Length: 562
Image (cartoon, rainbow, N blue to C red):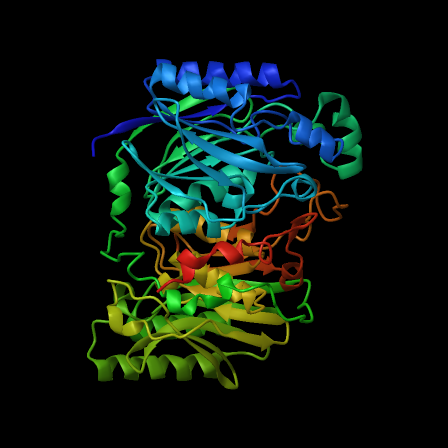
């Protein structure tokens, strides 16, 4: 397949359907002038997502065969392009959906995707998706569609990619900066697909209500506007084009959709072939997380980046532990921290001997109250370990194979959670951190904190991947890697999270769930930060919208199918 030009259009949508239609048509015209072959428009293009009651929602929604959508189909036909438009659609008496619609260059409706995860008050007016979103095979590539909150958690775009989508089209109605910074771009590299995302600018509620709503919600007026950041992202995570946060504009990029059929990382790992769907069953089951007592409000955690390898790395780590100030509860070392370049090149007996020596020395060095996490080749398998002065508390086998280590290391059968005095800890080992399913399983098992001894080889892993994993699961995350492509970090959860409720520890700054990050430098040594186990109990991003229990579990068969 040859290169095609795609466009994401961002503009303001108000409460006048005719004006909104004209803005849609103008954006399509501008995209066509730029030679776009596929154009994506924002979510709820027909009307503000703000309704007096159910009758009002119905009145401002559009019919599939009505003139409003018919005008857009005609404009797609006029310019001979593919068009993704999102609107509230009348489905039957009193039934409305938020739906993405794909029109062909001859104006035919090729596919429609109802929103699977509704946000806040949308639950009061819209019916969530009853069926999986289709993947539509077109002359420009295989296209999947989703909207806004569907992409804040991983399941909907993941399912589309697993069913063959090459281009993920995301229509947004969002005032959150972290949507454009984390949730939108991460869906491309985690699935090795293209993402074309279109958001709004301008007020997201009627202008005459801005001051009143700001007082009620404690959200400053400027943050009740669409956050822009419409963007086009490549399968490796590179953002090819990005709009600003304030102005209506159309951004373009030339892409080759067939590149999304290659799911291999630079080390040769095929991240789709390496998935373990037989382990993901809990993701497709009804919410049933145990009612557990929250951990402590604050815990001091740290990462340590050694400068050496082998026995010297062991001695260096132990010396660093001995020099720790009192009060540190968790320390994470990189994956295979005492092996050269995170690759086991020793004979099995030598590797086992070095691993046992590392365990013995670390255990002996631990002060009271400190837990240390790393991974070591134990029994021939890359194994995450949690240890303290009493010994090894948990062994977590790697779940997914990776080319760097070989298939023989992936022997884990699930994510285990360890209850510690300060909270519940899970360990995600090595390349398991690439898979959104790993962190989802940890959250479903009740983990409040994830420790991840890893080896980063792509920039997206630390730029969007790991911060987004913490955000979408509401988990504190402490990860350690050897400095290089990325560095280690301590990611704490912001305590205030749920929209439309009073926030006590911070003012709303446009970010809902961005982790509180303490990033290590590229130099060897210790980096200390604060994590918040207790904050993981709150997973309600808004009324009726839980980022874990609200996942579309009943539509997740593609994730769990072997």
